[in-house]
Image 1 (cartoon, rainbow, N blue to C red):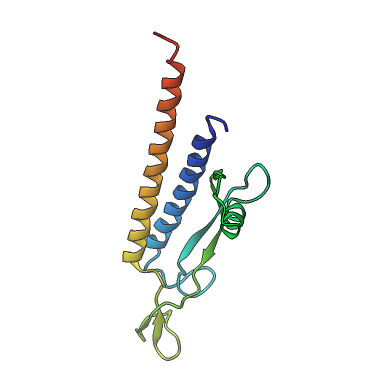
Image 2: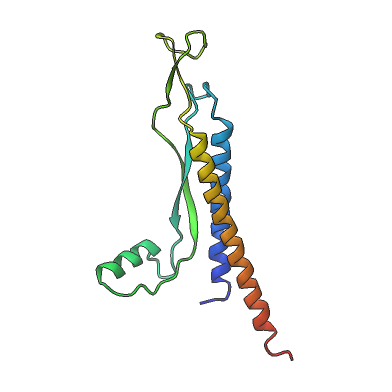
Length: 154
């Protein structure tokens, strides 16, 4: 296992969490958007992650599943994470009676975006903490590498 494997895994986490924070920011920015180019109210988006493949081509999840099924100790290490896609939340937004709004339907109801600002802020804090944890892991790995190079110096 290379000295840089941990840094590489954490770097992939930094990239993934940055994308997640960008998507959450976009959700918050569009929390009041009732008309989109695609038509209708804005739909909340979220990022789907998956583990990066291991060197022996079995995914982290597959190795972990096999270890659990065999009741064996899991000895693999993850190689990080990657964003697979950004999906749209299909839950309908709340309907508000606003007959004067040009985006209202024939009955006078306006569909609001399905963005919950409180939930988005909680997700943002979680993504921010995960980002900070990856930065801390990278700094710890850099510190260990620096100390390892200084072992022979006296």
